Length: 83
Image (cartoon, rainbow, N blue to C red; front, top):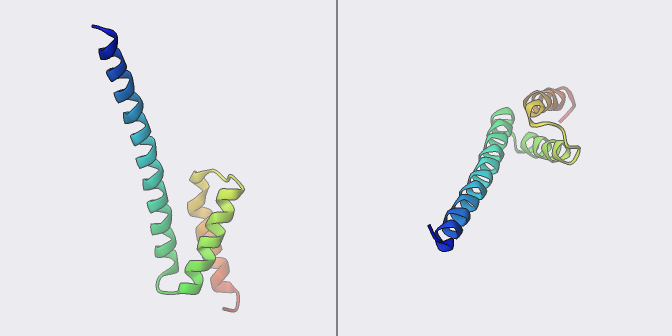
């Protein structure tokens, strides 16, 4: 094989990996938003509250595996407060 073939293989591999990472991150965001929508139901105030809390979890660099429990706890906290 000549150098052109190696370049094509390298570029294709890098692009495939980049595509996989972008798609993976997008799916994670969709899953998070679906969880928030499910916990909030038809309540826009609760949805906004959970979205803000989700952003705080991201800023605090909380691991994703803890998002579900944290957001569920925040949803219960929202219900207990006077809204």
